[in-house]
Image 1 (cartoon, rainbow, N blue to C red):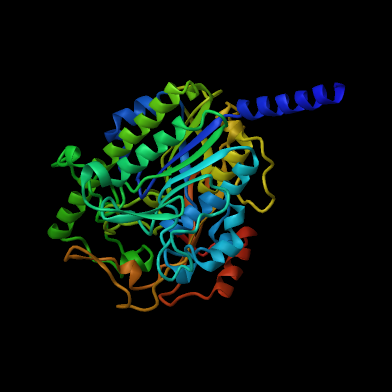
Image 2 (cartoon, rainbow, N blue to C red):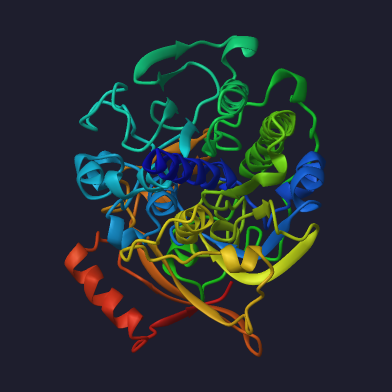
Length: 466
């Protein structure tokens, strides 16, 4: 009888410890800028997140393109360590190599082992379930209790998802199919059905990624808005690196019109993300668990719209592409505060594990932001980190694609591989030191040499102004 009481007490204490763990909700947008003012158009986001939590003024990604950045978020590793170099299967995006090297070491399995009921809703990796990836929509990566995930890249209508390993096709009916709203409903249902254990939710919206299709009620909400004319907007200079000085023409009036139209539509798609966030917060409040829940709002990278003559895209080491929104609310976080502490995409997984009380794996490159969240501002805000991108182009004229009839994305016609050391100190401010490779593709062996140089900070070849 005494043994029974002891066993019962251990089980009771274990259950209490599990219940006391905080819920964690991670909302990730796709291609959302912070430098071009997208947050200013989202008052509900401000009231639910910024006014209630901590805003990171120095949040960055380490690779400014979708699949490599999402791989860094999931694994806590730099691109050169998880080996997803671009958005194609050939370059590692949801390739067999991803599943062999990384899928057992993402935040999903670790959070599951930490006692969490896990749910993934939205876009996983750009080639998930696509022909050539080696798996179909029956594949559920390890560690995820609930799996409701888009096949391929961001879409708003006419897409398929893996609903717990079963293919589910959607059409073009707004009420039934608009993807941001669909994952909103699935996320709310998950919260309502998860009162018996702590939950970890990864909610990845398509917005504001192209084609940036707004919900009908938000169409034309920002009509007449134009992309911000920042100092670098349509800027032409011969002292910049070759992709700006030689590779990209000055935008014409027609191109500027297309860029402004894209800017307007991007903002309109984000209004549905506000609706999603409001629904999630409401569901948590209804379940009486909001006060024990950390909510993160983040983007996989930034975006440029006309800066340095580059039209609507990413893949550059400049502020617009690498600086992202990061806002966190939850227990112990002081409302309506801002920190100058550094936060990177590779810090997301370590932070979630730390909040869950799980030891951080030694092979993660990032570090936990938990001390910052709980008010331990660093003694100094000097920092340095790597920004890297392995361009996919091989030679001029190969692999170009177009947005409208006027805008060739020259970065996909020629290679713009770069390694950048981003540095900040309180006296000299921000600097970006970069090495841009030639127009030919760079072998990985050569890239490894440059990495060793940068880690030792023994050689800086070109300073690139912001």
